[in-house]
Amino acid sequence: MPLEFIVVALGALLVVDVAYTYIRRALDHPPPPRRWDDSPHTAGRLEASLDRTDTGKRVRLIRCSDPYTKLTPGEEGTISFADDMGTVHVRWDSGSSLGLVPGEDAWTVLDG
Image (tube, rainbow, N blue to C red; front, side, top):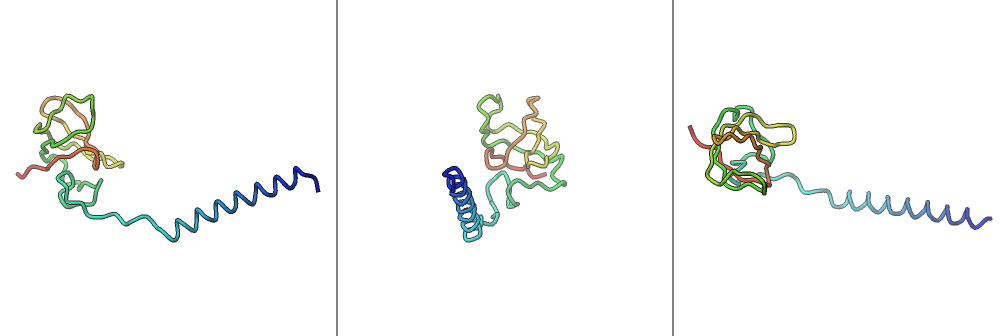
């Protein structure tokens, strides 16, 4: 047998072995289930989810991870909508329209 054939065959076996190992590990250790999060930005809901009924509610910013925003903690705004990625889009009283990202930013939904 030519040496090139042996090298290619060994390479294919290595790829199959690595794929098998990866699949076995994934099956033996599935990712943890999503958990309920009681942090201010989700208020007891699953992370990255927002009820459609929250549109129009007022929010207060606690923390924003965007280093370029002029928003400061304590600013308030009105929820416009939440997109498929979970970003909560807000019309801020200051005129900004920056969205809030669950897990990165923190906010609280105001009562009333």
